[in-house]
Length: 272
Image 1 (cartoon, rainbow, N blue to C red):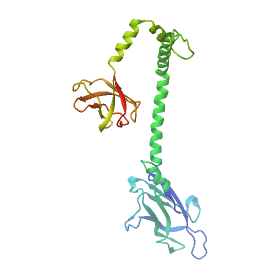
Image 2 (cartoon, helix red, strand yellow):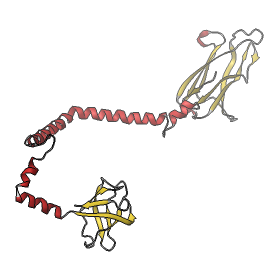
Image 3 (cartoon, rainbow, N blue to C red):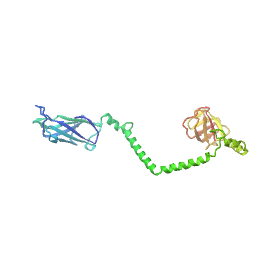
Image 4 (tube, rainbow, N blue to C red):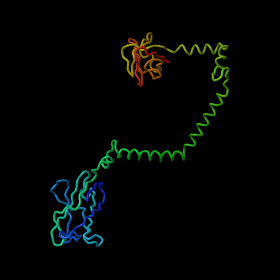
């Protein structure tokens, strides 16, 4: 009997002994012993192997039990051959008769299951993490989620109070405040002043990376722009904003916290 099993399994391997002359199932006698070999290793072993001759009182039916554990010396990835090292059938020696053959964790499925990188082993590990995360979500749902939802509702209600005050002279356009501003000199002056601090510029050939860009900026001292925010408005880096950590006036080189896409020459930006 053959097959592939997993390490730590208990194997039940039946075999039949027959009379040589008639082929009839016949009792295995003579104090029989089953012995094993690993791969092509010449060292014999009997650890973890037991034999029940005439199993269930049926003449000629024999059952081998193998406790294939690491504690008994069994190893995943090995081939095992079991044979009779003692015993007779109808007074004829059957020593050397192979009665079972098996492997441990040698099948493609077993190897895939043991693969912790991208096989079933990895899926098993990920599934365990999902189960743990799901349990945590269920706990959170029962204790704090309701409170968080209520907080969101409160904030949304507050926002609605403000937006309900908007007046629209044109559908879907919030222009009421702008119309009011047109007749409000102080508001216009304040808006003008707020734009005076906005700096516009463009990148130039030189250093262009996710953390630095050579620019056309002039008239600002070293480090004068540190702490301000550079916003790329056109070009390869458009849509990205980051804080300035250094400025070199001689070259116009701006250093900033890393962005995802580096700018190209002539990308335009504003600094606020």
